[in-house]
Structures are given as C-alpha cells and as structure tokens.
Amino acid sequence: MRLFEGTVFDRPPHCEKCGRLETECACPPPAVVEIAPEKQTVRLQVENRKRGKQVVAIRGVKLSEAGLDALLTKLKNSCGAGGSIDDGVIEIQGGQVERVRAAMEKLGYRVK
Image 1: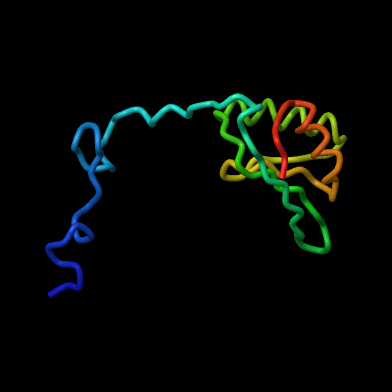
Image 2: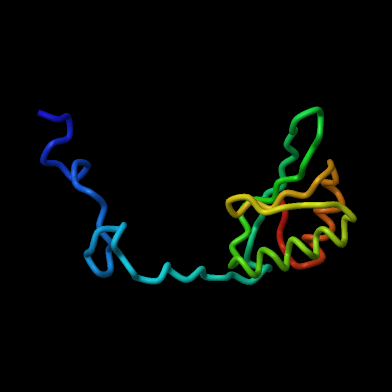
C-alpha cells in the first residue's frame, strides 16, 4: 500500500477547464492581467552573486512577457547596465539601487 493511495495526491493533475490530464491538455495558458504602474508596489533587493558581484532584483511587477521586456529595456538604458529576466524577476547588474528606484518612480511605480 502506498502512502497516498486513493487520495487526491495519488491521482495525476487534471486541467480545470477541459478535465484532461495536464500533459494532454491543449487549453491556452491564462492571460496575465496587467495592472497600471500607479497601482503596483514593487520591491527592490540587492543580491550578491559569485565573486562579489551585485545585482538589483525587482520583484512584484505584474506585466506580460512583452511588458517585462519593455520595462527591462527602459531600466537598462536609464542605468547604463546589463540585465535579465528570471522567473518574472527583473535583475539589473551592479548595486545601482538609487538609479533603479528613481527610474521606477519616474515610470509611476511605488517602490519599497
């Protein structure tokens, strides 16, 4: 007898829309609801990487992939640094917290 035999955790996950297994489901992914910058609060955090490198992580931005790419481009241009997007978190190279904060506030975001 298995530990979770006969429970919800024993069964493979199903799609909520069509009822098929998630591996067989052909439903489109849910659309990302974009919120106006004035209604969003983002969090800035300085993280240390290998060999003492620092990045500024921007969390809590609710935008689509295209919106995140456009925001990343604006931030990279205003800070004069590189950056990337990793799992919805925007990362700007260098410890440029004040520049990122100023750029985000200029775009209308509330920053913590």
